[in-house]
Amino acid sequence: MTVDPIHQFEIKRYVDLLNFGGVQFSFTNAALFMFGIVAIIFFFLTYATRGRTLVPGRAQSAAEMSYEFIAKMVRDSAGSEGMVFFPLVFSLFTFVLVANVVGLIPYTFTVTAHLIVTAAMALLVIGTVIVYGFVRHGTHFLHLFVPSGVPAFLLPFLVVIEVVSFLSRPISLSLRLFANMLAGHIALKVFAFFVVGLASAGVVGWFGATLPFFMIVALYALELLVAMLQAYVFAVLTSIYLNDAIHPGH
Image 1 (cartoon, rainbow, N blue to C red):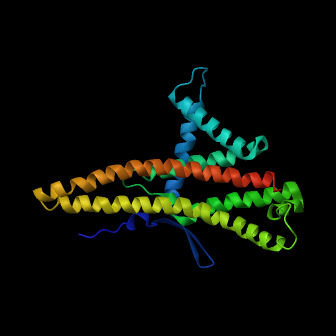
Image 2: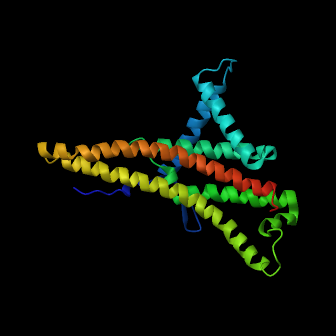
Image 3: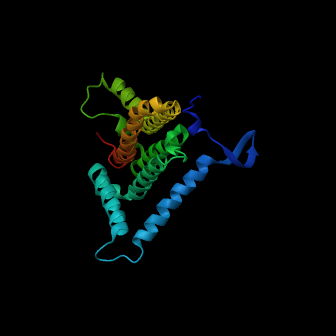
């Protein structure tokens, strides 16, 4: 009996769409789950906000608390002007949260455990910061990389540090989410293999499988917490980065 904890992240092609310049575009299991995640969010929010009442039900309360939670986060990080980015931050938060939670269901697929997905979201955030920053402030946006009150002889070094720090943001933003989801799911798969392997060894193995079974339960609870925390961290960092597009001065 062998264990392959990486097999759960395999991309499977369902439908080949087109071949452009030697690059094959296909509809994959990752795309299917991403469409499904968007559908879950859409139908839940539509159901929760239909026929809104003064005394909200459970679904309406969940939707309203989610709205207020993200709105407060954006205001605290980027001020009232930052609310222009609320749809982006709210969309990213709900997508990452639902994707992480769905990925914990057995026999599903965790799209946020793929670097290409997290990197695409991170590049969207940084791209929005750059475009909005230049559109709103013009070349003044470059003051983001020029700390004020710094001696002239130190300025070139600090500018280089600021540029490198800015360019590393999409890397850290994408790697943090990807690595946490990947590592957690691998650990769950390994302990699940221990349970199955020991349980198949007979009565003695059943007792030996008890410890890894409880480890799976504990890890699953931890992964559920991590799934929510990573969605929160992604949204918080997004709000902080978007603040630089609104207030680029140090």
